[in-house]
Amino acid sequence: MNMLALDTPDQDYWTNFYSDSKFSKEFHIPSQFSAFCLSEMRASEIKRVVEIGCGNGRDTLLFLQHGLSVIATDKSDAAVRSVQEKFGSHNNLRTFTFDVASVDSIACQDHEQPLAIYARFVLHALTNEQIKRFFNFCSGSTRKGDKVFVEYRTCHDKDRQKEFAGHFRNFLDPSHIEDLSQQYKFALCYQTIGTGLAKFRDDDAHVARQVFTKES
Image 1 (cartoon, rainbow, N blue to C red):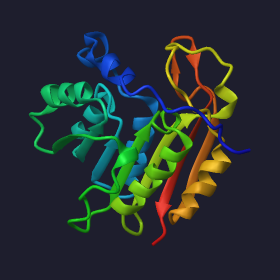
Image 2: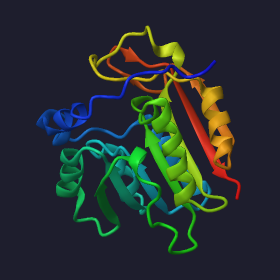
Image 3: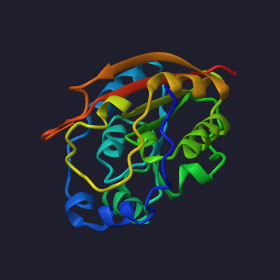
Image 4: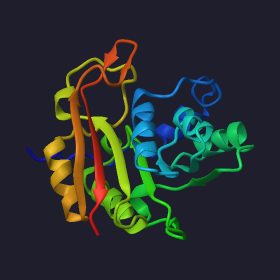
């Protein structure tokens, strides 16, 4: 199944979302996905993380607290400012505002330590063309053996209850994402699909978790 052809997302939605103090300033416990990824990163001796779509920073803080160096990014300047204000005292944090779909790479190959790119609930916020640009960014920012961790809503989530309605979602086929990743020299090394992985209130999303390794 191919991904749905959808319109360009509303560029103002996330800026407005994270400008609301309810989401940008309150502390939230880290996601289940970040705890899973942290365990996997430590097993792979990964100490550097580029976080795409850092949001209110709840996962950023988990990585920082466990000694990882984090480059936290978001296309919402409000989100990035909030993360910097809350966690800027951590010497192992850098923050940037940019849209991953419009950047070819980020300078993070300056030493030999393994790198992870982390993107929770990002892919389904991108159009089909932007997802290609995401993998192009990942390819340009990594070297052989580095990993990409993603979690996103699948095509089976389209008609399920949503806690936050009214914004763009691209419900994705995991097999298509795997095929696309291979075009950018990534190999799928872990996958699980289903519900119970990203539940928030009555929104029990049907998601895919995938981990990719850069092959060359």
